[in-house]
Length: 250
Image 1 (cartoon, rainbow, N blue to C red):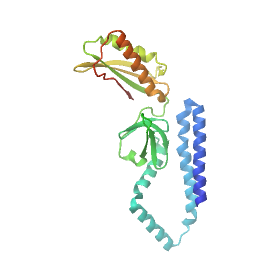
Image 2 (cartoon, rainbow, N blue to C red):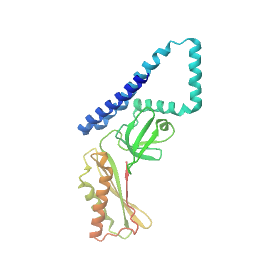
Image 3 (cartoon, one colour):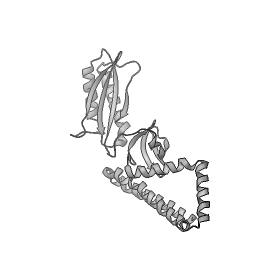
Image 4 (cartoon, one colour):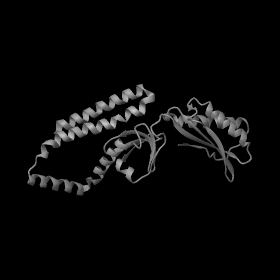
């Protein structure tokens, strides 16, 4: 039994490494290749479970009753959440609301999906923390996918100028900063837009554009923000004393 579990663990590690290696060599197929990793894990651990439990399927009535009692006791000791996570993992693999590499928001956590196993999904947050979220959470919390399996992703960049500033010129500056960024991706299916929202004491210029690689989300936002602010300063376009600029994902 121990040997089967060890073999299954080693197999998942090797398979995961191989999928990651291949995915990084084919960037355009990175997400679609990595999704096979959790599927392979399900198959490997499913086979291991069958090999371990197979001999137990031929139980006498008294043995079956004893095993059922132990199983019920285990659930009573708090393994219900574990089994819920496993069921959630199987649903994730079959329905694929998100894949490894996607940028998602689950409940209040946002980040890149780095791993999906039978119990939990791991996210790498913008501050490089790893958050482990039980798969059962998908049944109780909203799940938002920023790129839905595509390598491209929309990024929203916001900058604020004072109410008396030349908002038309400021909008042109933000537009130019976006379309000249080395991270931007523009075609007929991935347009960009810049628009203005009026507030009481300032005006918000919001630009929306796609990055070619979702991993460049924050690099793109920083690039556009920094170059826009530098142009604002050189042309005398005033920003509020506490700059209200930020970036969001789709």
